[in-house]
Image (cartoon, rainbow, N blue to C red; front, side):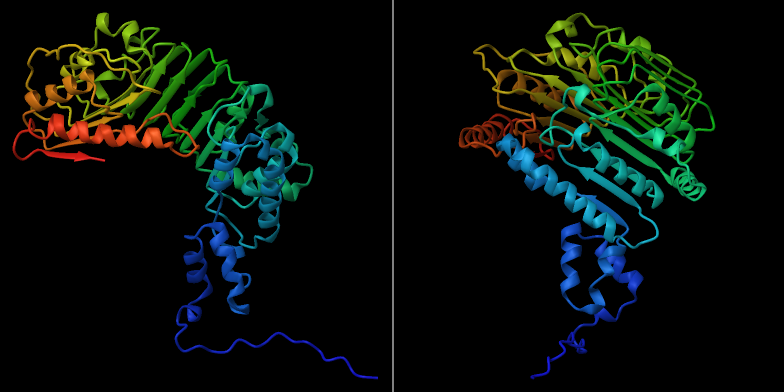
Amino acid sequence: MRKRVRLTEPKDEFDPEDCISLLPDDILVSILSRLTLKEAAVTSNLSRRWRYLWTNVTGLDFDANEKLDSIAANPKLRSSERPKYINWVNRVVRQHKGPTLDSVRICFDLDKTSKCAIDNWVKFAVAKRAQRLELDLLENGETLRQPMRNYTFPYKHFSQCKSSRTQSSIYIGLKCLKSLSLKCVNVNEESLGFVLSSCPALQYLSIHGSGDLTNVKVSGSSLVLKYLEIVFCLGIDTIEITNVNLVSFCYLGPTIKLIISDVPMLDEISIGEGYSGLENNVFGQLSCCLNQLEVLTLDIYRPEENIKVFAFPEFPNLKQLILKVGAWDDDSLLEFTSLIKACPILNRFVLQLIWMSPTKRRRKIKQAAKCRHETLKLVELVGYFGRTSDVELAMYFIENAVALQKIIVDPRNQILERSPLRIEQIRKEEFARKRAKHQLESKKPPGVQLIIL
């Protein structure tokens, strides 16, 4: 009877040119942590030396952009791609051997039907003392879903752990969390309070599309929270921010009762309230911090609703002004110059024009009253299509911004979609580039750069 031959793995042979494998494990893990997860996992095939190194990476970014692009183009793929994504994350979580993590990011079209898996991932991230946790569960990877179908943040799991060992791990893990971003995740007032009180190191909090959030209260000098975002939480009634060293605040959504006081560090705000974006006495709500603002972003969906009669306050310290404006029609944008005039030390101005299919009008170019802008150096016109309204505003800056150094024109559609650009859209953008060059190149002063993206 013939004896079986024992199969053994070939021993690694030293390659004098392979100097990287001679580096210590911690350096190799640091290098692998800069790769995508899939790239890092592939290195396990190099040799036995590399087989398990990738399982110690310090960041787990479960990015699936290509699959989300496919789902956006064909939503029927969702049912087959979801279990594949869940299995991939579960497999990596089981294999991870590192004691701690810097970050965990989940990015896929998942809802409450995947609750069990997501619960385990959140607990895993906290137990590994992750400093940054992101759950990006947008539908098709790009839109909010109906709140009743959202996954709910499992804060009760943390307070109901029966094992003292598990409780200790969770308690320490929550103390390490510095950044929490939740998209299409339901958070209520109780769970928000739990996060703020149980995560003493939390500096960044972002909540998008929660259906359960009605009242937000962020208060107390013991909080180290610096950045707060509340976006399209449509059931919200009140946001109260008091006695806290917040640096940046963003709110987009329906009109609310907004109370802000005793916020000496707050110098950046992004806001859009209601249908038009400037409803509910927005600047009155922000009155306590207008003088200290350095960066202001306004989302003005329907400027024609009230911009002509709006009285803008003075912004004595504002250095950057970003306007995101609904611009479906070719209405004049010169009304916004009164806002620019209210910013005497403005350094950078950005206008982001939002349109699906921009309309053009045949009309004479208007001119706003002249006003010298002594400090404005950079103007960015995003969504520029070469319409009369675009040219009017560009010429205003060319004629009045005496310190102007650079004009950046970006003709791309600002309504982001995962579906690939159609030939028609590509042609429109190329036409807009040519129009911008023709309209502005010869008009700009010497020494001013015109950059067309």
